[in-house]
Image (cartoon, rainbow, N blue to C red):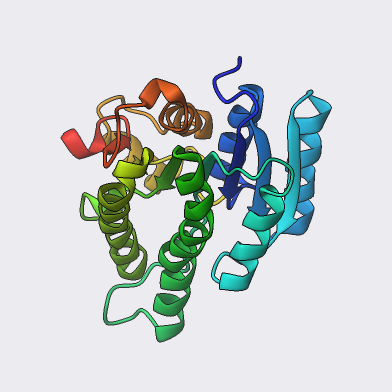
Amino acid sequence: MDRLKGKIAIVTGGANGIGRAISEVFAEEGGRLVIVDIESETGESAAEEIRRKGGCAEFMMADVARVEDAVHVVEKAAEQTGRIDVLCNNAAYLGAFHSVLEAPDAEWERSIAVALLGARNFTRAALPYMISAKAGSIVNIVSIQALAACPTSVAYTTVKAGLLGFTASVAHDYGPHNIRVNAICPGPIQTRISPQPGSDAYRWQCEKTMLGRVGDPREVALTALFLASDEASYITGAVLPVDGGWTAK
């Protein structure tokens, strides 16, 4: 119960779904959480629930696409200890389902701004603290859509593939500072935006996996916990699918 004991951890997009599960699991293991999201009501609720269970969490409303928001959050998170130990870049923007001929410019721009530049903004803000401490773990939540073709989501898929390149490059450059950077590629996970059980899309997702089911957000969160913790001290630049075997099938 203490794999992140006393560590300062930031989770972007932490108010719902996978991000909320990661926040909860990090707190259960002793992390001091800063939950970042644009949804204030659910963000406050997530932090309050963690505190009610004895964990340490605060919510900060921010748009990850804004450089100044990222800098402000990181500075506030590091205020007491001067450290940022864990950064989980989870925030993303899916938008609608479009092929390249249909996807509007606004969808491309928001996808890039949130998932890719958002990760850049928070990573760039957190790295100086990690370099100073000669330690840190960055976990980027990507998608199996960066590894396997999926229909009509070209902006999201392209940006997620770019996030894998970002992960590898930052891991290479900052490994000498003992900073680890890894990526998780979730497959179908049951969240508020997922196909509902019993629907055709839900059945299709189940059929694509080896395990024959959709995953739970906590299953991704436990993987993020491992990569964030010292148990993964010799793992960096890795891409770990959490997809029920989808990409290996």
